[in-house]
Image (cartoon, rainbow, N blue to C red):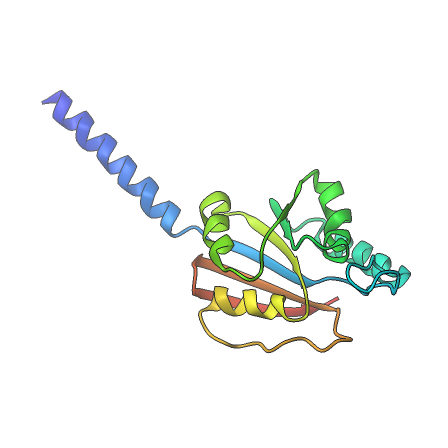
Length: 166
């Protein structure tokens, strides 16, 4: 009888744990890279204005509890999140924006966390739309660097978004 009781008790805890994990909110903070320089047409660095914006992003997110950082493999996207990565002592992970499979990986690896993703004028809205499960956002204009998309989600395709400017 005791064995049955303990088995049921363990099963109940396991069930409650799995339900809690399914209901866990994951937060995505998505930004376009900051202003780029004209030093390289294929892979430019950030300009002075862009470096200042990256510092502003660090100040904005200093207490946001960022637990993981992802960026496309370009200098400007990595440099945009480098200040917050340094202060949070986090590695900048690369992702391929052409495939949304990386979002499934992020959900598996960072459930319940706060993930910062740095992309481009065309990829950032694309990723936000994938998280939302609908086409809510179009490509950002070439001079639009100040948008921050905060997406909360329990499941890919079922999310809520708040758009801020910094």
